[in-house]
Structures are given as structure tokens and as C-alpha cells.
Length: 407
Image (tube, rainbow, N blue to C red; front, side, top):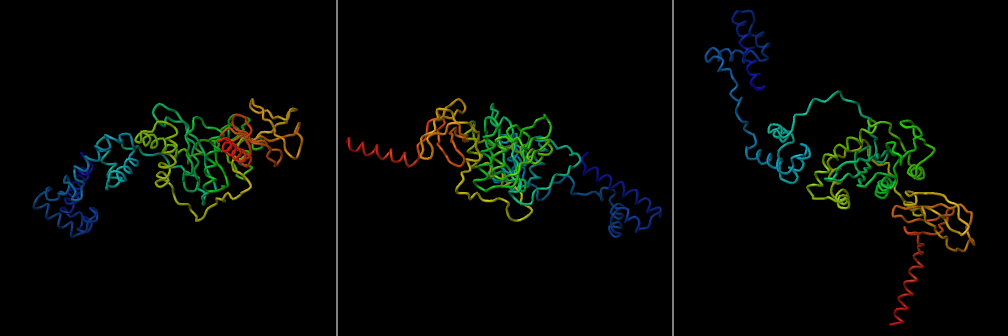
């Protein structure tokens, strides 16, 4: 028996009980009406209807009939067919967005959910457990950013890592990158994309991954003095790093990844994307703007805590890189990762033997040597010396002149 039918039978049984007591004069008209939750005039009319037509006269004639504003059967079947044939594994919210934005659907989320549940395509969700109180969001964008990675089968048969950098105040995803394996360079890239577009931020919330922190004892406190390359870069930029000590502490980013793992693979399948390069292009140009439009929330306060990167004398890549120190060999070279880098002659010193120099390794594999603030030389990823731009231009001009003369 349906719930509406059961409620109707209970209503009629209560009326019969109250009507009998009223007939035996154990209840006044006013008391009987109060018990049934109606006014005296309505109760008097119900008694007259019962006495003339019996219980059938009291039944609600609307039960079992379609509502005047109910959707046509064809519309419901069209929606169910679309879900079954194209969006079979989408959750209701995701499918409802697609249905309205791409297929002209007009009905509400509740209507779609009930239709899918009645058709047996989705299960009725179990009642949730006790609500846990979440940590309040930061009031301004740029006060705290989260970065985390998730290994998942984002396209069929391939396990990639997705590195996401998001704002605590608004849930906005500023950066999302597919990589083969999470590490220092992927974290540098995410931070670089944020700073270049929005500016420097105040603090950075991460897990205790080995590229973020050194942790002397497994499961223990992080070492805030013995910094990783990433930690050193954040300190140089004046960004405070905060370590999370449990998955629950990263609840905000964990919930974001649940949504991404549910939606993003389906979107990639719809677009026929199977390689990482196309997936990253889709993420940046299509998916992130759509995601932020749906899931980003307004900040509690107006304004921004971002500080624009305006230092024209400092290259951001010189911070977000690998920095090591080496002693110059007797042949005026520096050894690094199996390569030897010859320091060219300059006007300040005959050589740099036994001097301490800093090595900057960049994301593309190129290397720079610095002695204090002075940049000694730049090398490509093969270890070949790069000529200064002006020198290279002069050489190119000479080649052109020689070619003309020969011609």
C-alpha cells in the first residue's frame, strides 16, 4: 500500500472513532473538531456527508489521479532514454546540468531525481550519519590555498595523478594538472599558475608528502627547519606552509576530489580524450571554468588577500626551481647530475676555482649558475652554454651578411 493510501485510511478511521464518540455525546462538537484538526463547520459537513453517502463520501477524489501540472509521459520517457543511452553512470546533479544546458530540459532537479529513482536507474540514498562541524572558511580569497594530488584512472586503462590547487575561501580551482607522478615540479607548476594569474597568497595547506615536508619520524611532526626544495621556495616567497595530519583535516580537498573523480572521467569519455596533453588542454580551457561556475561559492568578505607579482627584477622561475650549491672544480667547471658545466670567461675574475656557486635547475631541464647575485651563465638541458640574446643576434646578423657576400 502506498503511503498516501495508508494516510487516507488512517484519516477515515480517526473520523469514525470521533464520530462514534460524538454520537454517544462523550465529545462536544468543538472537541471533536479539534481532535480531527478541522473547524466545527467542516466537521459538521463531514458528518452530513458520511450519513448520506457513507465512507465513500469522505474519500479524497484526487488520490490516484495525475496532477494537472504533471509532466507529459513522453517528456519523462525522453529524459530516461537520454540518461540510459548516454549518461548512464552520471550522478543526478551532473546529469541534471547536462540535461538542462545541452538538451533543453526545463524540469527541476527533484523531478529528475524522482524519475530516475522510480525507473530504478539510481538508488535512494541512505540516511546520513551525524553531521560533523567543518572548519570555517577563510574570509578572503588568497588567505589560504590547498594543494593535493589524486591518483585515479582518469581515462580508461591509464592511471594519472591530478594535482589541484584551490582556494579555501571560495572553493575555486585555480589550477588542475595531469602528470605521470606527483612531485616537486608538479607542485611548482600549480603554484606558478596561481601567482602568475592572481598574485602571491598568504598560506599554503598541504599533506605531509615527501616533496612538501621532511618528516623525521613516520606519522610524526614535520621538520620546519630542514626544508624541501618546495618548502624553501615558499619561504623565499614569504608564503606560510601548513601541514595536515589526517585525511579529515583535508576534508575540503577530499570532497573536491570525490566530485572530480565522479565527473571528470565521464567528461573526458564524452569528448573522446585519451592522451594527457589533450586532457590538460580540456581541463584548463573547458572543465575548470564550468566547474568553478557550478561549485565556487562567494567569499564571506569583499576584497582579496592576493598581492600582485610586480617584482620586475626577479623572475618567478628563479624561486620555483631546484636550487643546489656546489664548489667550482680546478678546471673552472661545476659538476651537477653527471654533467660538467664550464664557466665562461668574464671581466670580473680570471676564474672561480674553489668558489661556492648556486645551481638553479628549471622545469625544462635548463640550468643557470650564480655567484651571489651575479648570474655567471645559462645552459640548456644538454649542458651546452647558452649565448646571451644580444650575442646570438649579432652572430645571426653576421651569418646573414656573409651569406649575402657569398651570393
